[in-house]
Length: 151
Image 1 (cartoon, rainbow, N blue to C red):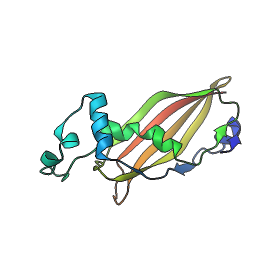
Image 2: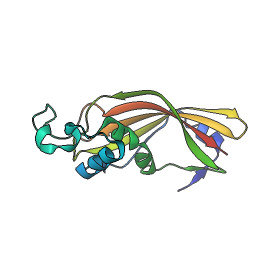
Image 3: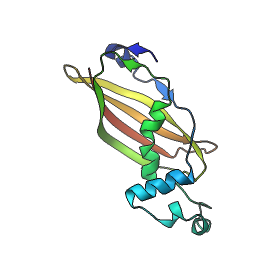
């Protein structure tokens, strides 16, 4: 891992980073259902889900969205010199476009849309986050996500 200045990061607006592939397993889906209390059969009952248009279980949309930190860790991205912390600030848009079937592999595309200094030492970054499903034409989701970097 290498380090860059916050100003060098600002020069990367428009750049896209792509993660490694990650398999979305039924165990992952079941654990998410337990954590959230969302036990809808299309997520946790493989037999009943066979009769749906999906042909089997699918990941929760919010599970797919929550893969953002894991997928972000699986990209070659530099560390910002002097960074004290980074925090989630929120999202402007989230659209679930294609369901992620159990056993599918996904990867994240992170496009840096903007980086603005809000006050000295506090920067706001906006990324377009797209989850690609291996072998599918349309992505699972597209979200615009905002985080803050403190240096």
